[in-house]
Image 1 (cartoon, protein in one colour):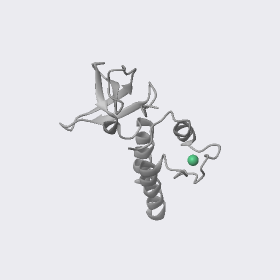
Image 2 (tube, helix red, strand yellow):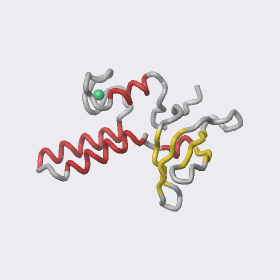
Image 3 (tube, protein in one colour):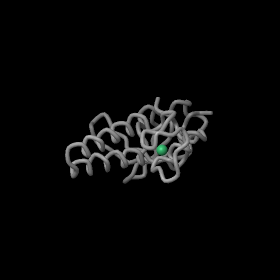
Image 4 (cartoon, helix red, strand yellow):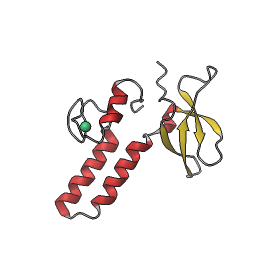
Length: 129
Ligand SMILES: [Zn+2]
């Protein structure tokens, strides 16, 4: 097991200069070290090799967290605090043993994290470094 995420997984990488790019995991040759992976950058389509640690959170998780944080601003007091808390927990522990949203080890039917967490359980998605 290389620990690389599956081909097609989307991430957003923040580069040293502060710019951000969407990238998609593409096939990685045998000559690349096991802790690195090839990704294709959005826009120019260039393929570059990055450290697994640079990948951060899968884009699907990042979008879910950002959506929660934005909609939390529309809610008031207790509701807003609850939504922010769930956003923080989702960002921090989306791949923990129990789910931060439905609180089950194997997600309940209808849990928005079900498929992502199932991919982690199958070894298809990398846990946080
Ligand atoms: Zn769940």
